[in-house]
Length: 456
Image (cartoon, rainbow, N blue to C red; front, side, top):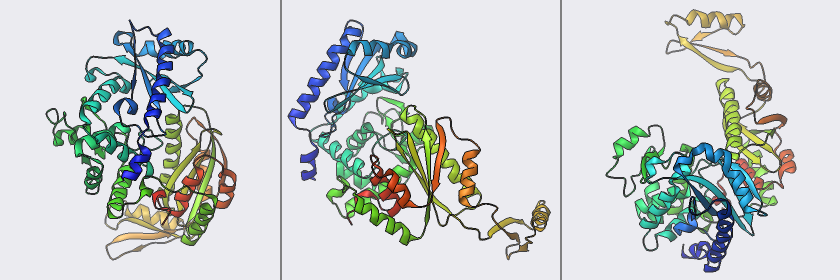
């Protein structure tokens, strides 16, 4: 792990360059946000001492008097910030309110408005708590714990569970910091995670006297990971973590403790020959994957991902409800082209064999309705040993026809058109192979093997 740490710990020159860029941004912003009214500061992983080498993005916050409110931010912030930045180009982005993303050299800078509050519980938006998070982490990360956070972040990135955005549904940097602070170090977090059973409750230092484990479970019922935010225990810091990503982290932790390798931190690069091998593995497995290619509108990434996942989930659920042999679903979006893929893996795509239909027990009131329906369709019925009415029916449409009908019935507003449906992985790969991140996505999809195990 020391080897990995040497590669991920930022050099002094990197930090120095990041601070130089921050100084440029701060000086520009101060033209539009004078210091006697506003406060400009650097927060995030650089300020907390948990940044990774090569990933020193800057979170520059403009703290705005609370009395100005969210409406003032929505109506004025972007305009004033753009004017102040001058010739520094910045792209408008949206979260709870608009913010700007700029690039200088190799650095990405998020310029975020937040309301200046005196205690975290006064927060109106998530961004308002950021200064309190930074202060808490800097106070609690003693000794070499910052390096332990770096290892945990790198591990989470390597196993694909890092990031609280909808696209990932995983662990934020702040949650990684809270886990290390609460559990004692990188290995301690993995050892604890290897024993987790959802729902998982972690009470960080500073929150124990404000909320108990039972209270936290009750308040945040339904969340697979509950971490009351020590600066505002009314908020679950782990709310973004889905059950799927929590489970992936548990499995990766167990596998790493069983056999530690560098690949958990630094998965191998997926090349075209590996993708070719993935096609062969998928063919050998014998399942069928439907690739639905769609064109998207332009909106905030979280909105696009939300709608893409919504459509994917609806297709999966309808197919499942109609007894198609669906196994799983996944999504890929190329932001530059505005096109996306929904992949639905099934035991078979064109199956026409009869379906087993379970009716009600023979003694319930609607049993005759089931019988009449079966007889009317010409399929008949029987009663099994448990007294349940049973029958068979034939499918009226293939899985592809069903998917086409689902999409034709309506899609979320940012999904413009369906381009094509394909069940041939090679055709899809030939069209998408050069898109960023596609090789990694399709390799994992076709092989059913996490990328950190691709070297095996």
